[in-house]
Image 1 (cartoon, rainbow, N blue to C red):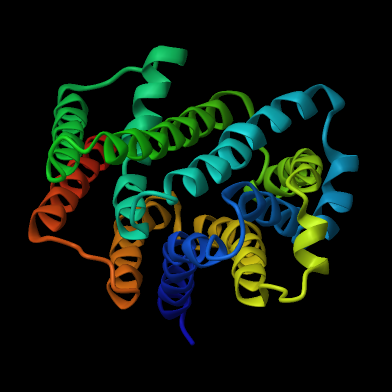
Image 2: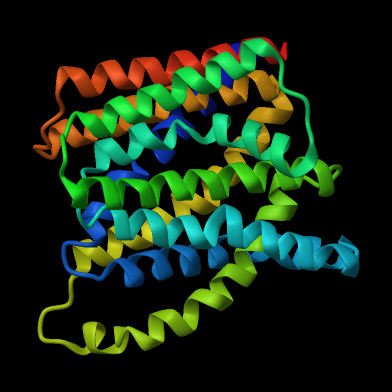
Length: 289
C-alpha cells in the first residue's frame, strides 16, 4: 500500500472514530447519567494510553506538568461533560455540526489570549461561521431548552479552541501522544471520584447491568479519546497538519449519518447551516496558507 493510500485510510478511520463519538454518547446515556458516561470515557481513555504515560512522564519537565494538566482539563475533561449534558436534550447530529466550530474558536482564542494576528479573510470566515450558528439555532425558533443545551456545546468548542491555542503557544515541541497520555491520566484521576459519587457501583450490582451503555461509554473513551489521539498524531507526522485538519470537514458528515440511522430528524435548513459553517472554516484555513 502506497503512502497516499495509508494517509487516506488513517483519515477515514479517524473521521469515523471521532464522528461516531456523538452517537456513542447517546447510546451510553440510554441507561447511564451524562456524568457517568463522561467519567467512563475519561477513565477508559486514561487506561488505554497508560503505557504511553509511563514512557513519557519521565521525559517531561516537571515545570510543564501543570500546563499539560490544564490542557487536559480544557481539551478533554470539561468538553466530555459538556457534550454529554447537552445531548440529554439535543440530537447527536446537531452536536456534530456544532463541533465544527472548533477551528474558529481556536483562531479567536489565539487573538484574545495571545494577540495572534487575524487577517481580513479570517475575520470574514469567523463572521460567516457565527452567522451559520445563529441560523442553526433559529431553525428551532424560540425553544429555550434547545438554545440553552446547544450553547453548552458551543462552550465546549471554546474549551477546545483555548486548548489548541494554549498548546500552540506553551507546549510546542511535545507530541500529541505525549501530551495526550499525560493529560488523560490526570483527567482519569479527576473523573474517578465523579463516577464514584454518581453511585456507579449500584449500576454494576443491579439486577440488569446495562452492557450496551457501558460498552458505548468505554468504546467512546478507548477509541474516541485514546486511540484517535494516536491516529491523529500519526496523520500529522505522515501527511502534514493541513491534511490532518481536513478531519474537521468529515466529522459532522459522519455524525449526521449516524443521526439519520438512529432516527433523528435532520432538516434541509440544518444541512444548509452546516455548509455555511464549513465554508467559514475553509475560508479561515485558506487564509492561513
